[in-house]
Image (cartoon, rainbow over all chains, first blue to last red; front, top):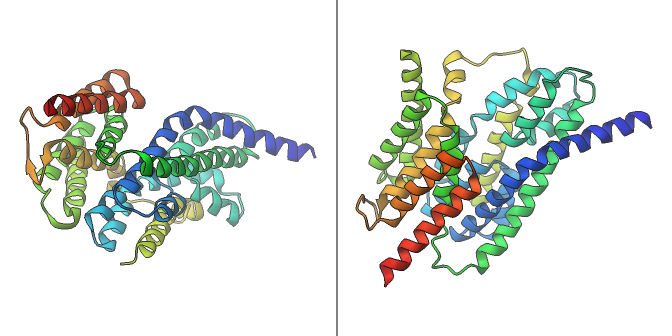
Length: 230
Length: 106
């Protein structure tokens, strides 16, 4: 009973730690839902993407590509590139999860988003007993998961109510500006962003949004080059 | 390709990326260049989407003053830089675009 109590306590601490982040996530989930409908996706598909892929930025990008009629393989490839950063999170949090059973590892991997990673890794790095900290991770992950599904649903409903002549698709650019600008920490970051942006404009008329992938790869190469020069 | 298949494959790949190290810790290491390039993925992808949204209208580069999205985008970049607040950034950009559209109409 005492152990169960401690587990529940960790779970709730995880949920609590995630709450301030949810305030930022819920509007994104709603915007995603609105945009998915705006792009012509069926409500079931829009919601299923939040469950199956469960990765914000890549969901935004895929709605755009679905709307542009990009081939499935291109969409899959782009999602993979956009979500590649999770490799870093996986590597960084893995040492703390070594002792867990396979179902736990799989469940936590499914819940490993930017936001759940951020609070969980901070918690893991604090001194003290590590035994029950996966419950904290689970709490943070589930809080985010639930809010993402609910806000997607709210956005889907909203998307079918808002008049179609509102320039709603512009919220995609604005959302990404809100994510990009505060994250630009140094020169290589800025060079990456500028290069990717310029290449994306130059390559805009390539078919199937191929320019996006090309721009991202060129931008990453430019950032690496800049970092290497220092 | 069927939309459902695209979703499921995209989801499986995303899951595999997340699971990679969690399930195989200590058995392999990320090549150094890949590891260093991962931090550039977010700025590269985000601005590859932002730039065309602001600068390309009807398939062509458009940098004149009548391009409301460019002006609204610049305002929101400024707000994002100053406040680091997502809601302010989105609301400011949307307001500017709605105002410009409104005044262009009359």
